[in-house]
Length: 485
Image (cartoon, rainbow, N blue to C red; front, side, top):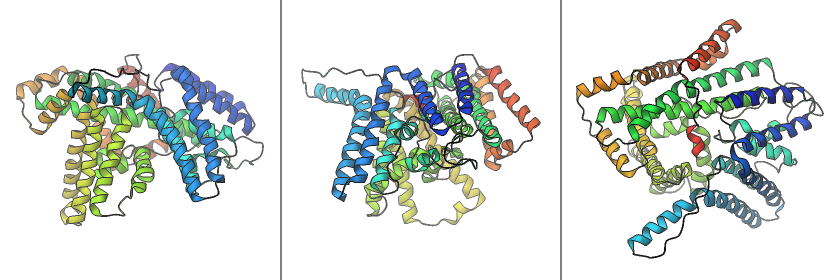
């Protein structure tokens, strides 16, 4: 069920109506779980059994890990739990990719037998709910939380529908307490858990409206231009490749951050706080700063559950550089079973390692702390960030290498620039709107200003959003980019 569809709007309104009418917490829990499973089943059908399996698997392994009477047994049970999670993810997401690589090597050595691909349908959201569930067992192993006493509460954590399909990635130690703590001053026993209040409703609707605007006004209207350019970029000049890359960077940001805004807003209306996922990433001044701003729930997950266990920066400097590359390689592979995502991950791993190396060798350069230096560092960082978007969008190796070459070796004819801009006026207008709004949001906390508007001005803001979407929307809801991951 797509957020940007009439089906979701109807579902969410009906869900809110029923959940608000239910007076007791336990019944609200049950209905919230039923609603989340219905939401998932609507899009995934029988593949919901994988979600249920993951939920049952980690719920009981959490208890087993907690009760284990030695560190070695705790570690053993954690390894079994992780093997079940990652094995399921790997089987459905990477088996065909592994088979294809094996067959490629077999062809090189003239092996006659080929392994047939399994052609499994990629289960929606498996990358996200697997990571949700892993935080639970690892947190118990690290003595950060105790096992959840209620299976229904744990199942809600894993399947919470606002962010189930594409994040933000939840952590058990942050979300589970919200299912049992006192809310809005109500007593814990018997009364409502989910309390829809005026401030929550206004802020939640504001976030959802901004998310819909990002997705339906900006991202979906840039998608045709991006597809036109990168479906076959061979022969296009540098200006078109660079413009297409910028368009994709804007598209994927507005698509994914738009989903996150809708998810955070919907959760807030229900009385739950889930973490932010983006913080103006296109104003990052270094590769490390970019990953503090982009897909924050994933980058912090990779830091806490992969980078630090690998040793982080506790070993030698060269080991730290290697850890950064390994983590981003796996982060790229997490996005999809394809070499283009591996290239994207390795590029960002290289950026982080080189930035760390330069920071170690040249710890302080006064120029970059001046206003001009700050702008320079942002421009340099964004050049490499957008360069890395090319392997993300250009999946064909020939298209990728050609586009990378044209992005780096800049050549074009002015007459082609004018004709291209004239024939693509609408996406150019959309990109200009994004740049203006993104710059304003960087200089001012635009969201806070919108949330603090008086009710009549706030109503006008919502009307502008609705009219803008209706005017530019073609009536066909497009999938969110991260639904594929």
